[in-house]
Image 1 (cartoon, rainbow, N blue to C red):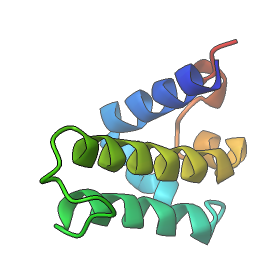
Image 2: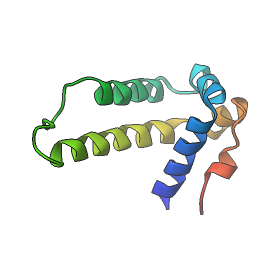
Image 3: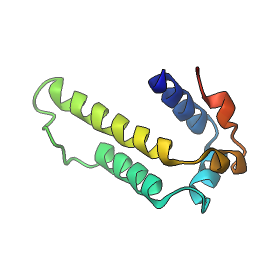
Image 4: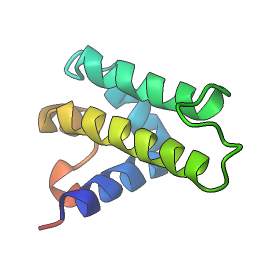
Length: 96
C-alpha cells in the first residue's frame, strides 16, 4: 500500500506543477529531499549509469529502480505541513 500512496503523491505533484514548485521552495521541505530529487533527475538525464544500457532490459531496470527509490525516499521526508502550505492535500494523497 505504501507504493500506491507514493505513486498517488507523485501523480498529484506532476499534475500541479506550480504547487509542486512552491513545495520545493518551502523552507519546511528538507534539504535532503530537494537534493535527492535533483540527483534522481540528473541520473535519468545524464548518460552515466551503474549498469550500462547496452545490456538489454537490465540497464533500463536499474535506471527505473534507482530513480523510484530516490524519489520514494525524498517524498517520504517531506512533512505533511509542507504539502498543506503548498496547497496540496496530503490526506487525499494517502491510500489506506
